Image (tube, rainbow, N blue to C red; front, side, top):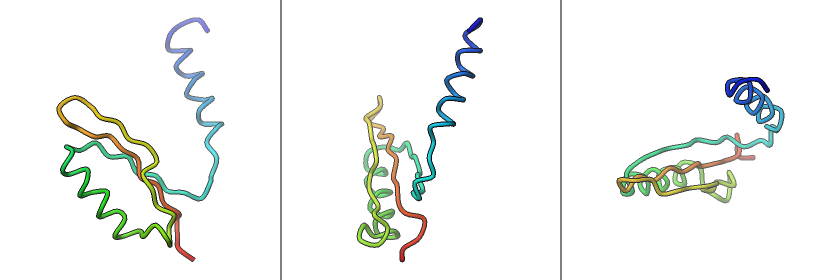
Length: 78
């Protein structure tokens, strides 16, 4: 690696190769805490856990009472 940009491109390419199509759709949101809760509840109402295996894959608190979270679900319910 000659420059920081080279390193960044190398790391991006490694991440792209690691991505596997596991059948899940992921959506990431960054919202104030009350809105994040409502968004997650709406997601579970639209994509029930039992049918879509929906879940909060990851979340973290950000400054200003913001929540960043990733929801995942199966592409379709069978």
